[in-house]
Image 1 (cartoon, rainbow, N blue to C red):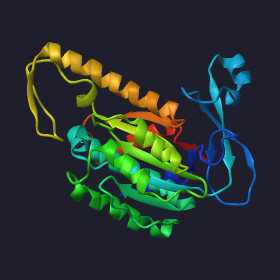
Image 2 (cartoon, rainbow, N blue to C red):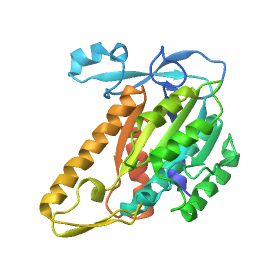
Image 3 (cartoon, rainbow, N blue to C red):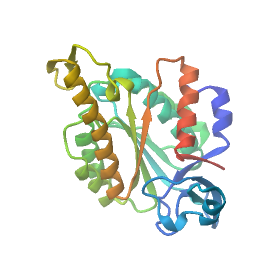
Image 4 (tube, rainbow, N blue to C red):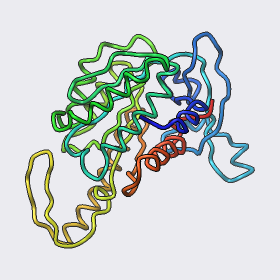
Length: 290
């Protein structure tokens, strides 16, 4: 469970989403019946629409800033958590669970929220802080299910295809390393066909992106295959790992979705890791001030 200090901070924030409208820029969900109004700025991100760039701020500061808008409407959140074997490496599972807990707290306070695991299991849809304990317990229990989930991209596509068509504004937040040798486009197309907006939160460890050079043995935790490698192969792997992240980002942007890369910090106590996760979500514009 996240600390009382983090809960107090989270009470000042809301979930940013473009799910509410394709016409008025980045939106935040709260309660029904109110109008759309300017809310805040954040640094421009690749894929943002240029019409929401504040050119007056750019003229004064030389920095590109995107205008955020607040829509006092409720959206439905589907938070999808990867529990495949590769998430066990480099602290990704622990960090992803913390991210999910923070996101669920903010979203469920205002909107119907459901947590899904990529093995097909899901929590009950809940809204309001009175039910937050049940959602958190579901995430905690997901720790015992690791190894049962299918490879993430295939499982994400199956999740989207089995989801009923969305009849109102809805957002899928997918927290995963997306480490599977399969094209991502099909899964993203399935999310789009169900009427979902989506944000892909790609969680990667330093071992995934910056492995140390030397004589190493690579083990594929999904298949069990082993490979002896030297410095040259490690450098080639590092280049391919970064290219993989770029391909994931490009596929998300082409589909009209957001992509965020979050690196797991070095080994740290739970509270320090929690602060890092919160700061990353604010920095990337996933959480915005109420």
